[in-house]
Image (cartoon, rainbow, N blue to C red; front, side):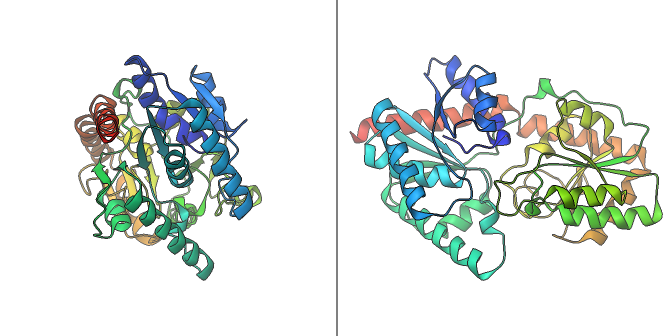
Length: 373
């Protein structure tokens, strides 16, 4: 079960296809007519409709969502349920427990905007969500797969949960053969790929671009990704168009060929506030692109500072821009970092390594459930 976002669905397709190849009958529960459903159906993956608002907090509608999920689990009687992202993990764990369905495997793929946003209301919500996680970890037998140790430490907070099995696996993997290594382009271009939300560090990116452009008008900055109105911190189209009109960035909203984006980019950046395990940085490494990212959980689990790219302090546009200027004219350094990045990804993050680890934990979880029964 996943939310309705297309990115989330894309990241799960290799795992789903591998499970199907092993003989499992996989059905994905996603919001009806969502981008995730379109993505999965286009890959011939069976889906089940479930109404879910990614940002909704109305107690009645959220309770109805859990009840409908309970009905799905009762009807399907799955051997195992796998949940990804915050709401599916919480709601799915509750519904699965009440319906007495199969083994529960929760994928914590990043802690979302609530865990990094400021403000009294969001702090209250964050603490509430944290308390719900704690209750689920304490009373629901499950396997939780974290993508980085920072998320594990934050959520578990050194507490002992006797029914909980945890493991850290580096993301969902990236298929090496899908991302060839490219020569650097003649046009100098810095690119950020991701959802258009505050937590991806969009404003930090804009500020760094302004600093660089004061010195170098020839360097282009591309913002690649769709609007995400379902996210509490989405950035509206009017603001992006204003940045475009001021010639700070080029916005590539709908991109069919992501490889072409990497081919046209000199440097890939991710000034994010926090990540699970950022696939953009993995793909960039495979294509031979040096990366610059904020020194936060997730990003620091991928980038080797000074070896495959650079890490800069969160929201520090000055340091961010200095790293761009340091790299952009040094083709030999960019090639060296890009090659090191490709080798690093192949060695540690390929789907050939990651997917078997996830499936192994799923099958062990199923075996434990059978024993408990």
